[in-house]
Amino acid sequence: MKLSIVIPVYNEEKTLKELLRKVESVVLPASMEREIIVVNDHSVDKTADILASEKNIKIITHEKNQGKGAAVINGFKASTGDVVVVQDADLEYDPNEYGRLLEPILSGYADVVYGSRFMGGAPHHVLYFWHYVGNKFLTIFSNMFSNLNLTDMETCYKMLTRKVVDDIKGKLRSKRFGVEPEITAYVKKYRVYEVGISYRGRTYAEGKKIGWRDGFSAIWTILRSNIF
Ligand code: UDP
Ligand code: MG
Picture 1: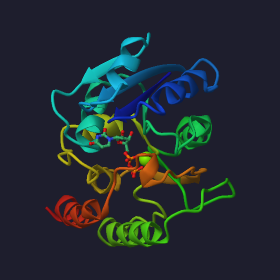
Picture 2: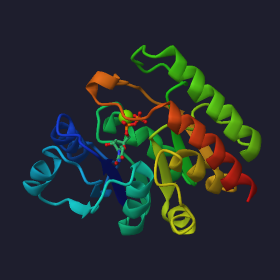
Picture 3: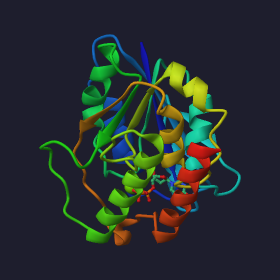
Picture 4: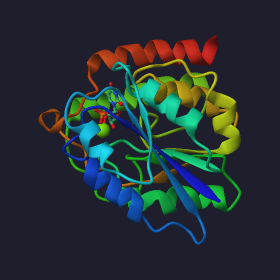
């Protein structure tokens, strides 16, 4: 068995090295290999230099900045693992929780596992109230069309089996953060599970990039990918 870890990266010089060390050192279930795929979405900071000194990592380079969605889609296409997980390059999500995400898949009862920031007893950095409201609104709006009862549609931690990745990778079109509701629309026909995860949310001063415009475009993506 192999786990592919797809990491979209845009200007993450502050956290990338530490994140990669964490991803490399996570203890996976016995005999599980890992494949680390970094998609450098045309970073203009020291990200490329950091990657140049890395070994045993597949690197995909975008000629221009396209957005998280484009990076995730290209990472999916390059992945070869039996299970694939998306990992943001900041340190908001903790790779040590892969085991939790893997459990329902390895036990054979899930095809898709989302890590929810709104479930479970793990620590959560208390941050923006209006982000929470926006998140909840988008999750509920997405649920209305997918008829999935998710608590956290926008989570970065989406883990998919090979079968699901192969099914959706050619359908995904969202270049930016719309990729989250778009993936959700296409996986709704599979066995979807959620597990509670921790969340060390970062502030805009620390480099957070998602903004209110992305919320509006998510609404359109939810309609497009669920209805058309
Ligand atoms: N990202 C990217 N291209 C972009 C913007 C972001 O590859 O144009 C990456 C970013 O480096 C990070 C992930 O997508 O690894 C999520 O971005 P961010 O943390 O800003 O989003 P949020 O946590 O607000 O969802
Ligand atoms: Mg983030």
